[in-house]
Length: 286
Image 1 (cartoon, rainbow, N blue to C red):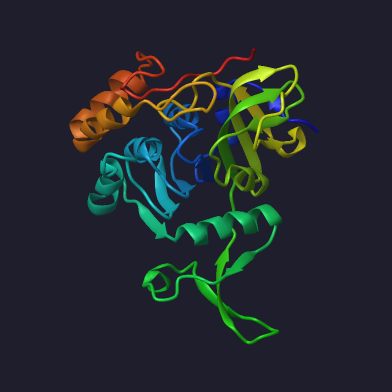
Image 2: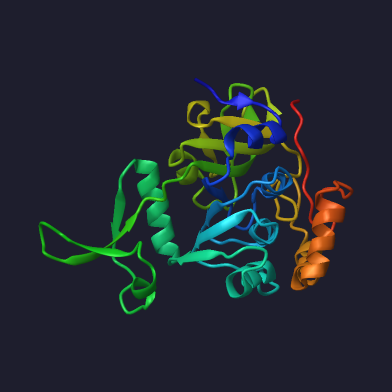
């Protein structure tokens, strides 16, 4: 069975449901911004959002009322400052209360690895000397049956859906990405359903240095979404829009300015991909 090639709106409608645990993964580049914004447009609610490093697309989703919980290890507007919609939801419950579950980077990476391997939990050396085990119920201990050493255990993520962005896919559903990657592969392998948005669909994948290839049989759906990672970057396609990240700080800092952006630009669909108003695109089958 190979991945279905579809549009972004149809993929979100088919794969993402209210109450799901979802991960939109990408590290510095290849962040699936357009997919996150389509989730907002379709009005999903009560989502558990999972990500190693949530940035502005999660800020947008939280501000739009999509999320009830965030599982993460670091959150911020990279190079700029705080995520104001995240802060408002945690501190003031606006637009809805947000539960947070905090881990270290290593803990999150191990949870993704356990999910990808089909294991109930991962074992690691970590969290020693921190207060996180006191505040995070998904950090436990296990004793090694061979040495007696007490180690840290973290559960798999129980992902319903994983969404990532990549440079290319072929018409058989095989996905190719390269450059700075994170846990995208593990996210897809560890989820019940998966969507990969891509810059383009090609007849044949040209080998690239340090590439990651996901075979079509592990991916549920592929949607061609050119510039689908804007304002982050896609190596070989476009650069990071630094001005957009700075602009988001102003938009998100105030509830009124955020609501205006949400209603008049994102939901109205009046802006273009790549603008400093930070909207993405919807995909069409090529």
